[in-house]
Structure formats: C-alpha cells, structure tokens
Length: 125
Image (cartoon, rainbow, N blue to C red; front, side, top):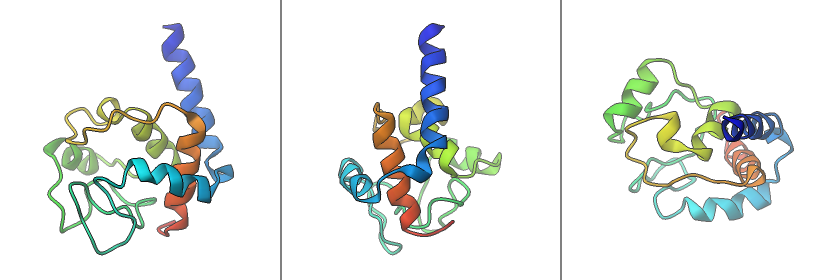
C-alpha cells in the first residue's frame, strides 16, 4: 500500500512538473520510444506517430490499427494530457489494460517530465 501511495505521489509530481521538463533531455528519452514510434505526423511504425499527441483522444489516428483496449479507452474518453501521459508512460499496461504496447514504462519521474515536454514541443496543445 505504501508503495502504491509513493507511485501515485510520483505520478502527480510528474504531471505537475511536466511544464518544467527539459525538451532537449526529453528528445534523448524519446530514443527509448523510437524503435516503435516517430515524432513526425506522417509515419506510423509498430506504434502510432506521436506528433500532436497531447490534447488528442486515445486511438484517434485514422490510419493506425490500435488495440481493442486502446480503442475502448478512447471511446470512454481517455484524452492524452500531461497527467494521463504521465500515468501511461509510467505503467502503460496498468493505465490501459490490454494495450499492445510492450514497453514496461519509464521509472524516473524526470524522464517522464522531459518526455512530456518534448512531446508537447511537437504541437497539439
């Protein structure tokens, strides 16, 4: 229980500090994502492109085949903002059970902050 409270507090701090994230450091963190994602708005790889992701509803790209779990999450109103991204980036399969994203998550709050800052620099807010 104590561990869950600690993780929850870290997620809140990560979400609140996202605006203070370092874009350049976030671009470096994005290297962990680059095997499956790109930051431009024209290319999907194994995962969808992430340009303009902040502010978008989950599973909203028309040219990407999302998992049923992600489609259901989007239909239920999941929108990618700093808070929901911080939760997803920390534990993708906990935030969206059944997602096909195999990445286990980022464990360092500063990496989450920086990645969100980088994604925010791509547009969509």
